[in-house]
Image (cartoon, rainbow, N blue to C red; front, side):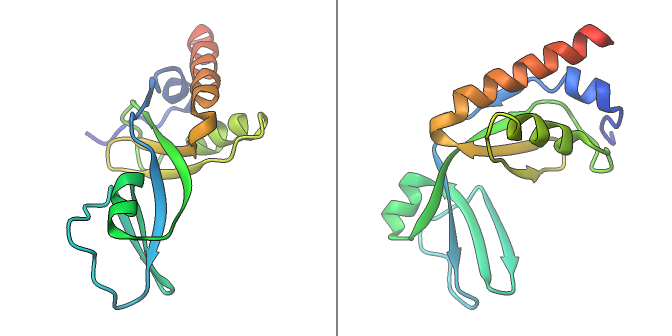
Length: 137
């Protein structure tokens, strides 16, 4: 299964789902070893170091300096990695409300990290966006 590519269908069926965890972003310098007991939700190697997305509790217990307390919203539609404009449309709608978003594409779904204190607002915006798109199909 390769996922949906039709933008109106993606938006109409995105079914945003809010995670119960607060996540943070941390970094390990190149050559650093992953602290014991840490199982990041995501890691990404860059020239400057490895970015970790992990729960705030994990970061605190490992003594990692972390930033951007956020909540993860999963867009529960199987979006194709080749879909054009999906994240742009979502990010644009959130930006119009002054909400920043850090998107991550997984094989099956897209995930949005939004400021923890504005997650409910982001969810409401995405639900309205999806309902609007559904009414046009």
